[in-house]
Image 1 (cartoon, rainbow, N blue to C red):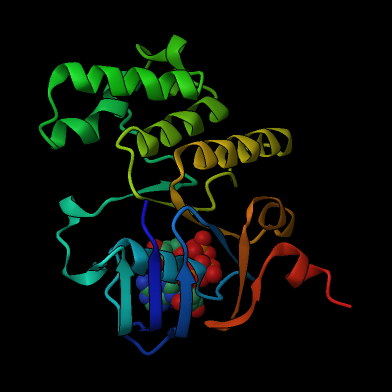
Image 2: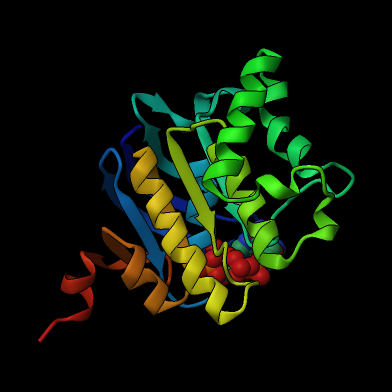
Length: 226
Ligand code: ADP
Ligand code: ADP
């Protein structure tokens, strides 16, 4: 687990787009934060800066006591889940889950235990030998979640992970994501443009507009204003 301190963070892309403007968010250990707002308001850019995937123009992001920009990618204690799953098509589900652990030179017995535990939690044990193309969209998204939880990272980052799924599956997976996050106590930042998704998932919502924070608070505080 880790707290996240986003302090006076701005992003100006080459070419001059000012995508994020002086954003401050203090995220507690184990908190589930949802970034919500219209397309182009800066959600993905902010998330990618927290992930260390996008250079920060101004300000700092700290995860625990470490400044994100100074930590080597392999040492970042985060896992990211995308809408397009980002699975390796030529690898079995098992190898997809094991991949991140193998890269860290984890002993084989331990890898096996962790892969099976993650697969059990997500109910994808029956598919461990299949290739991703032999799975449904919902099963693929479970594998993508499995890849995120298998390393037991301190932080989960979600970039619209459910937007390729049908409405019914979105509701199911939403519940499962929240349950897993609670059980593991992992701090989470979740990007969506779906208000209902935001309201049902968030401990606190951050509403972005034009790269700035418009509102921040619990779903009740943000959506139930008189
Ligand atoms: P959101 O995730 O809320 O849809 P983004 O963070 O993707 O918003 O984009 C915020 C703004 O930054 C938009 O105006 C977008 O066009 C711009 N932008 C995003 N990525 C890049 C990039 N790599 N280069 C230049 N501009 C970008
Ligand atoms: P989303 O709205 O889901 O964040 P976008 O369609 O804005 O997705 O962006 C998709 C990809 O294109 C991202 O990798 C983003 O960095 C890049 N991108 C977005 N806007 C621009 C832009 N104006 N110039 C260059 N790259 C961009």
